[in-house]
Amino acid sequence: MTPFAYVRTSDPNSAIGRVAQRTGAAFIAGGTDLLQLLQEGVEAATELVDINGIGFDDVSETVDGVRIGAMARLADVADDPLIRERYPVVSEALSETASPQVRNMATIGGNLLQRTRCLYFRDIVTPCNKREPGTGCPAQDGQNRINAILGGSDHCIAAYPGDLAVALVAVDAEVMVAGPTGERTIRMEELHRLPGETPDIETVLTPGDLITAIWIPLSAAGRRSGYLKVRDRASFEWALASAAVSLGLDGDHILEARIVVGGVATKPWRLRHVEDMLVDKRLDRELARSAGTLAAEGAAPRAGNAFKVPLLCKTVERALVRVGGLV
Image 1: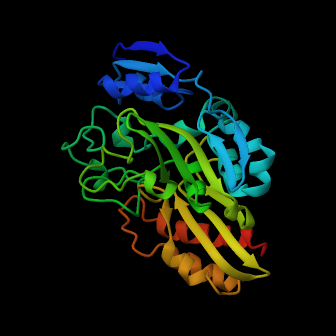
Image 2 (image 1 turned 45 degrees about the horizontal axis):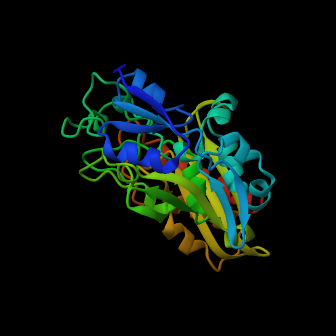
Image 3 (image 1 turned 30 degrees about the vertical axis):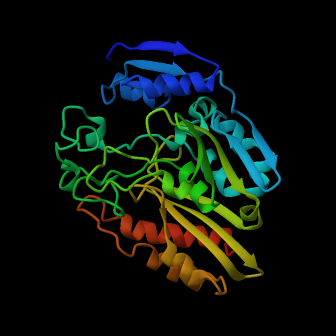
């Protein structure tokens, strides 16, 4: 591990200033992903700015929605009565994340920014465009079982590993950010970038930007929602495929739909073409099956992850069946 300075602060503006002005400085809160990356040499830091004392750790009701502080721990948000009642897809996604120990330590903001689990990114002796731009992407023809089938490029097919971000896109969430130039709001759907030719640039955040909260609109609370995660083992495992479903229903008639998938794409992946197919239809098993079949449209699988195509289709179908009460 490269030596680094360590600073604690309870002032968010001070933290933002330090990270913005010092090359190699980074925020640390729960540290559940960052510390691993530092230990393994995947990332290096000149200074870690501990922001555990800055606040932003509550869940509060607003006139038009719910605000989740970015420093809130995953376990606390998953168990919050307001989240469980209004946005079950978020609570379920958090409950499916990592292990109880990690959920008690990791923060909401940090979880959104976790790095990929691609084998080549995590192994510093192999080339990786995401870790070292211009060195290549051996996953294209190598060990790519856990990699993306949607949203990839010739430069990177690393899958985004998180659960929470997938669920937040499904409820039209927005990310509140404070930075060197002031405060701004980013749609959750737009936080993460496609790899394109610059896979090392993963989000639209800039140095010194600090996620302070997540806001979920009240309108999403009126929809029926749920999260389904398929993985190799029952706990502490990343998704091979997941689906966050949020449906506005009048009886069994679909008024609006959000279908977002994870584990199969380079970012939380919204299936707008599936949503369009569902709206104004009667939800039944046949429609769920048709939606599942359509979910993999545009997929570009490799030899090792071709199984994700039918897996994605079945995951979307099962999620719709569950949320629609068709079980």
